[in-house]
Image (cartoon, rainbow, N blue to C red; front, top):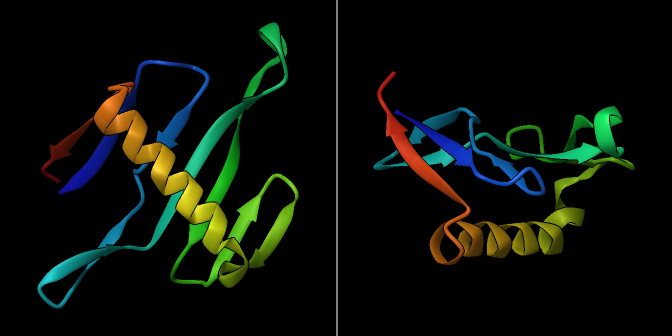
Length: 99
């Protein structure tokens, strides 16, 4: 089963195509990557904005790579925004896909 995020805006793209692993009775994400458009107009390109790599213990953004412990507040902000966009604003839908 994979979680696929289908977004309806180009301003905010949250990507949960990250692999996950079984851990006991539950599952855990190995990493979460959030993409954004960098630039303007036809020169804009999709770039990795935030990357939380839980397995490697690293956090990466447009400015560099840091220990995951330095990203706790950023992750809380990302998580709050993601839940709001998914559950309240209905900007994208989350679908379970076998495979």
